Length: 221
Image (cartoon, rainbow, N blue to C red; front, side, top):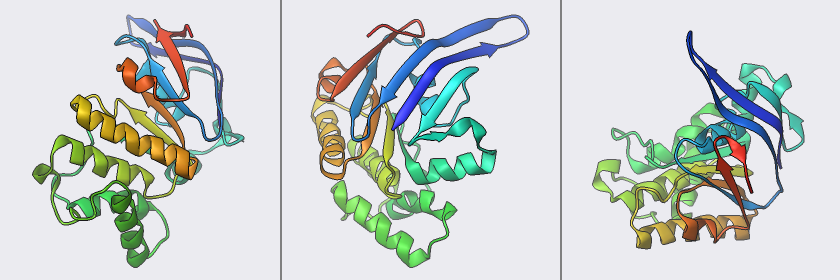
């Protein structure tokens, strides 16, 4: 489902060149739940952003669902990202001025679908994460765990084949973190969603199919 070949990312300024990730070769199978671990600053989020087409590698090739992404225009890449990928962030990235249901609908606004269809899909996504009774609440009225559930609902509302999760349990206590992991595991097991998760938590990583470790931008396991 995801194929990275010889991926390198270099950040350059006028005086400094920083090698963020180096020589990454990683294949993620369809339906796999993969976790990525490593110390802070080792390149985990950079790698996830490259997988999610939010950042371009300095060198190397990316294929997602057998598509060579390097040949895509910006518009084609944006459409591909919207249809194929769902994103979950540690800090939720919800819009506080919008109700929960409207937050979940957001990715669908970039598709040619009716408001009725968007509303139905958003309602179904919230039901999957156990928040069907919070549709008219605002993010500030929710707990951290509930906000992360809203973020998951937003990630899955477009029925993506791949979910990329950056520290999805990082801001939560262990009990709520386990609940969030259970939701992700169920999505992977019951719907066949391919999931790549960055985490600092070894216990969460051990619940996934495979663990990849990074150190100083290189894959060490």
